[in-house]
Image (tube, rainbow, N blue to C red; front, side, top):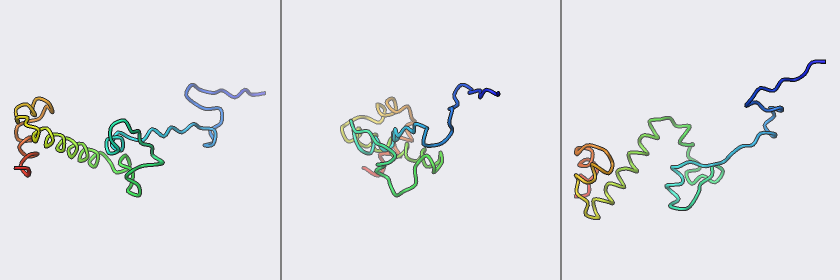
Length: 104
């Protein structure tokens, strides 16, 4: 009689109903919901839009830039100097100027 060999990292039964799916959400939805709130894929605040992880790196990069721009504007309105913002976000003066240009 042959013995079934189970390799490390593999499940004895590969049927989906015997697999534990983790619904940890994503950091973009967490940021959108606010501090202290945890998102989940099944309750995504961006639904019915496609998942950001399905859209590709370009979309995620644009989201990161938009979030950074909002943070730059918020700190700039609180009185922070562009030189300080350069150090905080580790970006060039041109990037800071581009972010606050529509706010003047």
